[in-house]
Image (cartoon, rainbow, N blue to C red):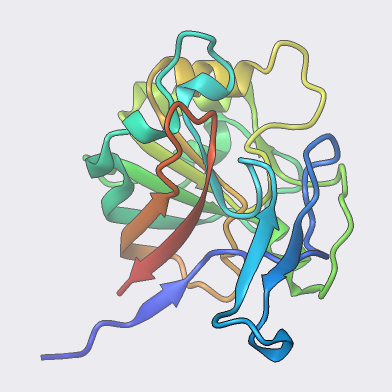
Length: 214
């Protein structure tokens, strides 16, 4: 039996990491240190709920939407397709999604775009020049039964889009959004996805550890 290959597609959390411009930054400060005579090392972590690789639950944009601790776990674990959209310059719409020729029954779709190259930088700066899903593209995903969609930047939608139609369409239909994945070097194809966020009670989001098994 061939051993399972595990691919970590999560961003590391550290003080210099890229965060969304309006979100809290990250700080990791010592609270207790063995070197200072304490019994154990303990740190204080400060970050936003949408830090690094994270999940958007419906509550993120819908006041009465489900929080992160109520996301169906079976949506976060199971077969997934990594789709090669690295040639897309800006928008992922119905035409780009149709071109993937997805097999019937695909429920988890991870969009590998040119965004992943940004994570090669040690301390990337925020850029408006990232690839995102349009409102029509979101509608296509809902119509085709996608339960989870992931993308390799901090938002599935272009920053400043009036009304946030991509988020509203996806979250309104119960589609789980995973943002901030690192798919650099990941081949397109079929995988098993494990993507579990922190269980923050009534949370509007949650950092997650995301893995692909092949």
